[in-house]
Image (tube, rainbow, N blue to C red; front, side):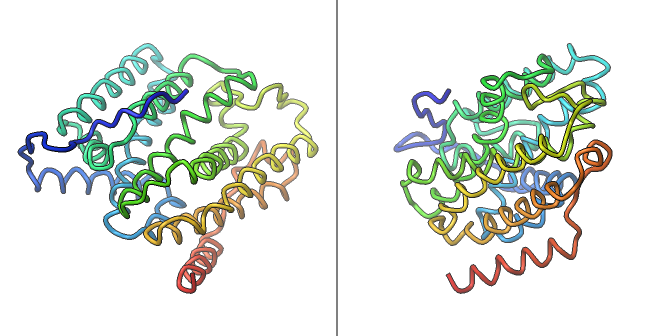
Length: 299
């Protein structure tokens, strides 16, 4: 799905644009508010990122959250055609901001700051919006469509973050770390599918896992899905030690949080998974983050 790398940032001797540092700061502060308000696990882990990497990763995830709100929010169920138009508008505005460096949408503006600074691949952005659009048009997946969906909805987000991690250190070994970044994004997405099985089916009318019959969902089905997530987590773990110090501890913490979540899902009876959204308690999150900090201090 990825094509030729086509960064949209400033390069070489192109004319320097006129910027308003105050507006940039407000936009990035708005992105941080979005993350803190919507994602507790990511919010916890992102605090371990070094500055300015932390802000740029929040800029990426804030755009992701905004698109999620369009396709998963109440309007999507009431008026899917309008949600489709809103998503199309958001995508167009994102491309325009990547080119011009400006948007009146604060979250889009913040994303554009990061996209231009690190030359984020427009094809990754396009794949992301294609997957978001799928949520408005497809309710049941085949193995092929699920792979495509996970690539666009999660794996490319990991690849954009990887561009930031490495770009901030002037490193160019993106290709070496790409498989791990994709595996970690896939694991995050699949575990969220698992913990939201009933809500996705009953509230949003979606079944992500191909061939899964929730009326006959068994512990054996659960175990197959948990094992698939664990395989992705194991692949991702092999590249975390090779990440720059600006992000290694935070990614290790996120990996630990989702590994714990996967273990907890594995321990819940299948019938209960359809009634309960599995969470990691705050004290356990704190322990996992502390362990990641200790590992980072001796790396």
